[in-house]
Length: 434
Image 1 (tube, one colour):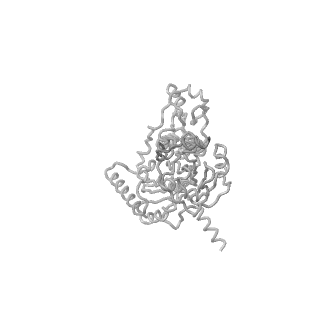
Image 2 (tube, helix red, strand yellow; image 1 turned 135 degrees about the vertical axis):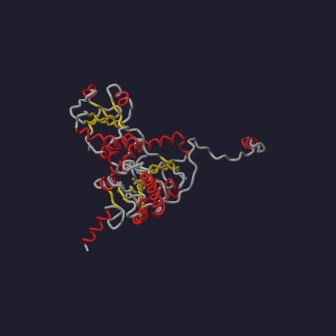
Image 3 (cartoon, one colour; image 1 turned 60 degrees about the vertical axis):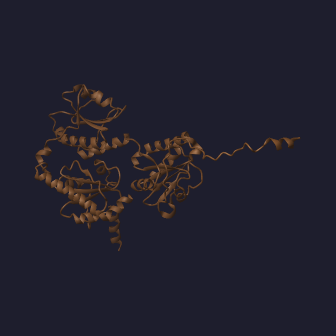
């Protein structure tokens, strides 16, 4: 029986789907062949094995695949394992469902319901549109002539005149290719660079740019950056010396590197106040960890004190933003069930905890609620150290709906004024003293 056990363990490590399902498991080595080069319509789920919503979708996803067999291809990518593939298509949360139609380089987001019925309906609608377009000659799916004409509109043409203004003064991230028109390697890079430029523009909301310099014309730039061979790709970041791009020369590699640069420079994740059960559920189930601060009551700290705690948290969210964790806060006493289930209730605020919702385990900050204390706490967690306990009750606790903090100092509750006019205080006192 030893051997059987071995197989089943391997299967588990492989993710949610097995060869027995009609779902095609996709990864960087088969994605190009299976999806990008196919004429079929593809529905693809990008998931992470630790994400609760992904686990709930699995049965419906298999059902969808079986129902659409031979009509629409249904695939799945473990984007936790294959981060570059998720990154290439701008996957920020899980599960993400994308529809790869006529133009495989620009998939659409599926926005509909998550039941197999809703997904199948969505797929069939897309299919109908695709066929209509082909009938009217609008899009030939794998029409080769169309794909050979490279759409270069998102590659910025850089020159001796505009380079400093566009690149150096922009404060944004640039990947710049120095090329020569006669060079063969440059010609094969061209369609990859152009496709990457369009994807990166869209996925970084136009914050990371791809440019190209004809080094035979703009020799000033070529000599300034010591360009010796072609193509040479350099990365320009605000206030730093340019660095050489060392990665692969196909669009996936270029996009993945650009998205890494983007996340290094991106805004930190949002820090949300726990106003209702949805905020907690969504944040804790869609991210690997949710970090929760329980801050002192507003009357104890005032707005200034509270903002200084929130600021420390924002700094930490910035520092750990590549981890894709969720960040939440609440006021002491607002969520008593939550405090009780994490063993915080009534002792020393501010407190901080990190919950892993798939394991229903949590860790408490033992050190100080300061940049140093929190950094050490999160660093230990990120490498799997630090002691954890099981969330009380083994499930996320009941959450009360509360009003958002208005950003102001707290006000003491108003007590009715007593009318003191008819209490004669002086009389008695005077007599006693004689």
